[in-house]
Image 1 (cartoon, rainbow, N blue to C red):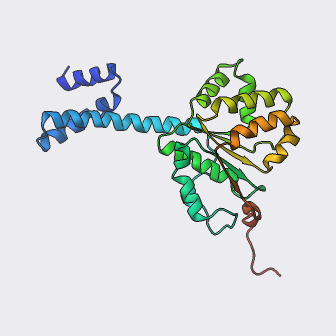
Image 2 (image 1 turned 180 degrees about the horizontal axis):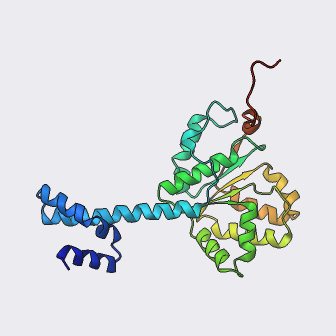
Image 3 (image 1 turned 90 degrees about the vertical axis):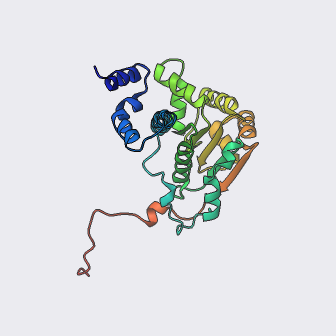
Length: 254
């Protein structure tokens, strides 16, 4: 076995896969450019660091479970819904995330709540944060099963360690008392440690109608609204205004 192959084998034992995979090219590059020993070692280490950072980002993107549309670089600013270009840009800077602020996106269906929330979640992942996107229904399912299945338990632990949790369509459907209490316990656990983005078509005052518990709703809102930006979206549905059809338009028809 050559020295190169021996080093590759050692790298694999040490789980330095990027160095092992790129060693031949890096050795040739070092020889061609007469790189010093220290610079060569630095190149090897940086290669491994870059590889691990990319793998970590890919893992966080997968775990985030984002919907199909989330790229805010493609956001249609011509669509008037109550949030301006400058305001969205400020949200994308994520300064509020550093301060453990929450964001509530409130408005009718089709005004961009989910798109914006998912986009901010994606931006957070890109910047190195642990961020997760969950519908209220998915989250309730995890809370119900966290003490029963390994998958739900693992999801729950990831949420507790997250920097950002997006809860989509909160309070859209009725929540029974047991689920409401479990949900409150989660929000209480995340309070002042994890930022939360909430999308909803109901005002906070209407949450009582869904939870059917004034005391619990008040305690829940107390924690969410303590450090929170409430953004009210309005206007017609973007989907309805840009509705697509399977039929081609025939200009020759009357």
